[in-house]
Image (cartoon, rainbow, N blue to C red; front, side, top):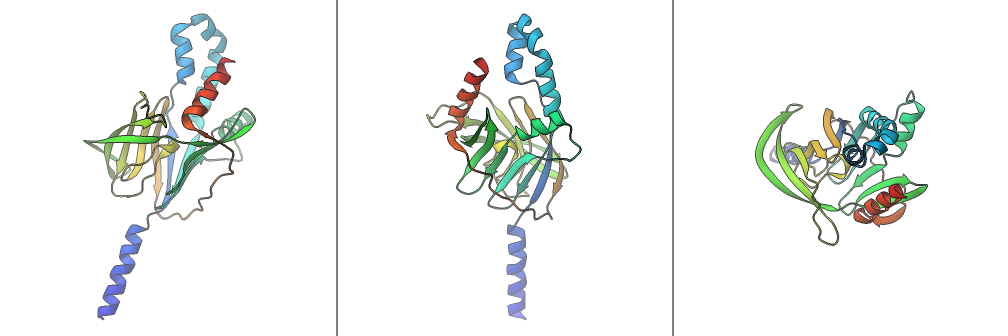
Length: 229
């Protein structure tokens, strides 16, 4: 009997520690910062590009994402549907995939006909005492900033809401590193809200195809220079 009790306690502990599943996120996006800057500073140029900017905004808001996770790893990418229109399929294909495990934290994407393996910057977090409920879970608010390899801290603030009830360090779009699963995140023009949480799913998490290695600061600079050119 004593051995049976020990076995049951050990079995239940393993179940509690092995947390896996998925979260479905909706992005209530804003206009990209690039287009916001044009809109506020150059009305003539905005008239030329506003149709494209508004179309991109529409596509961003149309995409639903899934974060698959377990204790050690996660992957975040768009949910693909057979009935998606051509533009939506194209937009999803350009969204890339965010992969994290105990050693790696990368963004895999194809931009300008090149495959990139973007090493994401670490995030420094400050956890506040503010709380709210999301999908039945009590979540705490955290405020973060990205720290790039030259120790430069980004001025763009990240706001995330995470729950300690699910103790995995994952979140949407490479926003991670907190002592609990992130169910809401705000960064730049992206505003991710969890719509569904499934803790019974055991979907396979596969590392994406590797591309040209580059860090996040270098990738951002490359994309900005490509737009200017």
